[in-house]
Structure formats: C-alpha cells, structure tokens
Image (cartoon, rainbow, N blue to C red):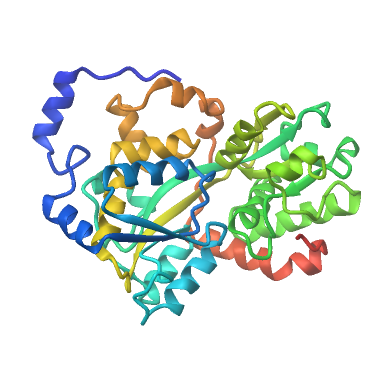
Length: 367
C-alpha cells in the first residue's frame, strides 16, 4: 500500500483555500474557557484500547491546566450511557463530560436527549456515513474483526471462519466479551454470520448464532472472555477481537508467547465507535477542546499508533499526513478493502437477534 506524500506547496494552497478544515486550531476563547473549568471527566477509556493511554497523555501535555478525571476504564458502552443518566443533576466528579461508544449507542443517546451538539474544526473530513448531521455524535475510529492466535499452542493458523470449526481447534476459540452484553462480542457473532454468506442484520445474527452453536457442540468454543492474559496462559489460544485490540495485545505480549493476527478471508466486518458530549457535561468547554484534540492530526495519528483506523484516515492519507510505518504496522491493506460497514439498522437488528437468543441457541455462559 503506497501513499505518495503531496508537495508542501499543495498543502499550503489547501490550507489557504479551506482554512476551516483540517488545518484549523481550537479558538483561543475555547482554550481559555476550558482552562477555567480546569477538568475533563472521561469514562471507559482503557489505556491499551486504541492507543488511548498516549492520546490522553498528549492532551495533558498540551493543556496541563486541565485535570483529566478518568472514570471506570473497563466500562462498556451501556455503562457510559447509564452514567450520563445517573448524573443528570450531579456536577461532581462522577458525571462524565464525554463518551466513546459503539455506533448504535450514538443515535439512541441523541434520541434520549443525553448529548449536546458540537462540530469540530475538522468536521468535513469525517465521513458523512458515520456522523450525525447535526453534530450530536460522530465516528472516531474503526477496526475489523480479527483472530489473535497463540502460536505456541496453535500449529496451523486459521485463515477463515470455517476453519475454526475443525477438530484441531478443540477447546481453543473464545470471544473477547460476553455476547449477551459486549458490543465487541455481539459484532463478532455478526462477522461469523457474514462469513457464512448471510445478509447483514438479523439474518447474519441468526447465522452467527447457528455457527457458534455448532462450534460449541463440537467442543471448540471456550466460554471464557478472551484477552491477552487468557491467550498467554493458554486457556483461550484463539481470541476473536477487534484488530486494534489484537494487535495491541500482541505488542504487549512482545513474543511471549509468539502470536499472529489474522483478518478472516471472508466476513470482514468493520466496527465504528463514536464520540459525543454529555448534555449535562459539567465541563462543556473542556469537552469541546478534548474533541478538537481527538480530531486533530495529532489525535488521529495517536489512535492510528494504537492500530485503529481514525475517522479522518482517508483524508489524511490523501494529504500525505500518515507516516508509512504506521500503515505498515497494520494487516495488509487488502484485508480492509473487503471490509463491510453495517448500517445502524443492521447493527441494531443483529444485536437484538444475538442478545435475545444466545442462551437458547448456543447455551454457553460466557464469563
């Protein structure tokens, strides 16, 4: 995958022609107002998820006057929404200013009046398909469903969903979450359904359930939430997870054990997460400044260093702003060319199918 850097003169010309886009900086007024608030409260941002540790650190370095109050790093999207609801009348440190949630949670949070609109200065470079036209929520990054493999225990690396049903993978395959509650696991089931040739949405969700029922019956499925620790210990030698989580875990393990990250040959599912500012944010200006940071070149490259494809990825590649080494650290470009981006309706239909019938169809209590 080769991306030729554009000439500086062209970048300069673009900056003059469209100063309101990617070259804009937060206003001095916004920065001053955020500094006066003195705090930003985040929630559900594990430092090893999508490079968030470094992204948060760079925000702190840029704005040392603003304390970053991090709530419950291991919370899920539903927990983030509940935290806004529970703290509507609370301006204290338990009230989140900003959220980072699965795609389906953006529109539902807007519909419930839980978000306030804000359009960052790089708004036009966020694809229209992953943002609310009024600015209530906006896509931040995406990844594709992948397989993280412990090469000490798995002799033949599986290349596609069908491979995981083979006898040689007995007692080895796990999801990176409980498919009755985890966005990542729920979409893992959808990806498996797409791998069987089913249409995205309810049909693929049901096909995915049938797939995991077959895997469970064969004894290949492990009802344990897979992560780097369980993979290293050998209890879950193959984990189905977002590529950025798999790549991040592999980096942390640092060859102990040796690992391989594979994007399946079929059923390549892309998953988008979105940002939003709480309608009840105690620090609304700090929240807006945080968004400006996330959608700046620095913030977007911070996510890319964490193996996520940031929302402005395509525009930044075209502008020659993405270092080749960051692109080379990802799986081959052709893996992403086949990625399917489900609609909100398809995501919701799949979620209803999977969470409603996992127990009855698969019958594996994942924990």
